[in-house]
Image (cartoon, rainbow, N blue to C red; front, side):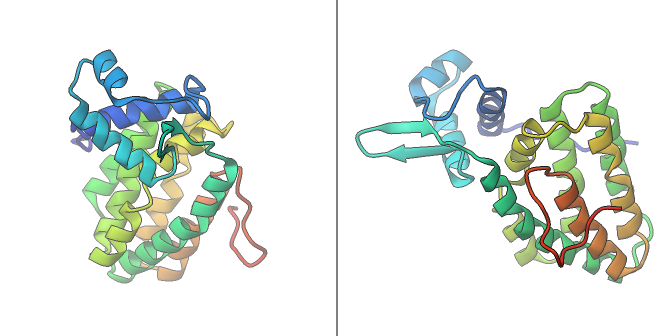
Length: 219
């Protein structure tokens, strides 16, 4: 079975590099980042670096100030927890929609899950974040709602996933295998179960966040 294809754009590769440098602590909050320096270090032009900066600023990892330049923003646990209910709501809608369509099998979704479980063996959290994003993106795409998909993409899901994994003590195998109940719920034909599983999944695997009293929790 074919695994989901990885992203190949240079701007995304540069974005991933900077994200991991931030996640590993190599670029702590307040560190200046300059397009030319990064371009020279990575052997590329400034254009894809500028695009990577734009994407990282959009999700709150970088900030640019007049007369100061671009610096690493102090990305806190609150940034992650603030995104949780938004993502949970969007994916809950997607899960409910897909289950309501009566889809009982999807080779691409299963391939994404199997790829994620395979990647977990390497312990590479960046690769796991990419595989996880592909899995969740497939669910959102299956819902067939362009407005929902655009809203979901605007959250910078993959960057958020990397930062969440960096701030979490959960091991890669546990994180990967936690997606299997999600797949089963989405393909169960039960909209309520699918929505509940996706919402619970978001709260359960971002330790810095706590669900509100009326939110579901993982079993």
